[in-house]
Length: 194
Image 1 (cartoon, helix red, strand yellow):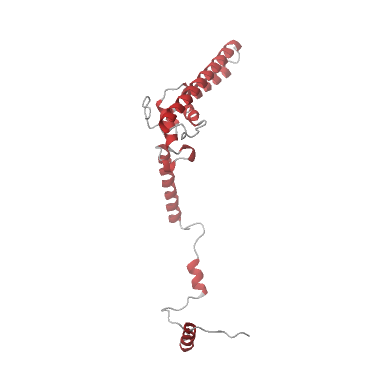
Image 2 (image 1 turned 45 degrees about the vertical axis):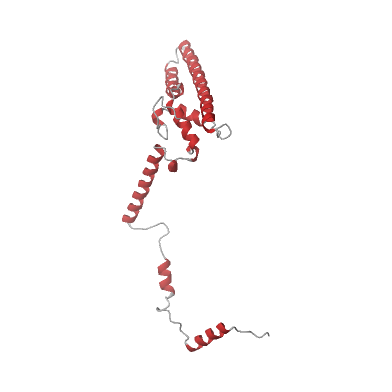
């Protein structure tokens, strides 16, 4: 067996332990039962009805704050697809523009209802259907023009190499009713962003 070499500090600590076996710490060692009682807490939260009501109220307040923030366009509360300076610029530019695309959903819904109601009159039904196709074509042309114009404006503002791809973002924004858009339009019609 190898001999253990003790350092001076180890030797002094061993002598003190031999002289005073209970180290002074100011309090008794807690029992196992006491330690377990300190660790216990509910997994889901407080179980009292008042605590649950308070938790629900806090969650409701947070959700309301997030909804209001999202509607007002606060970056912190926006979904990832709506965040960024360029997306905000695109939203403001689309919101400032008059567009046939806003009328797309109501016109198509009315045309479908009228077609269903007038199933007995085939000629009128076909005429309405041709009108639908014409309107869809008009909306498509309007959206293509809006997308090209927006791309040009953003290239001028941000630079050709820094413009991110927006995909169908401006198109989907333009198709919604102005009042139903989220985040809410922050500009009036004709007030194009600079």
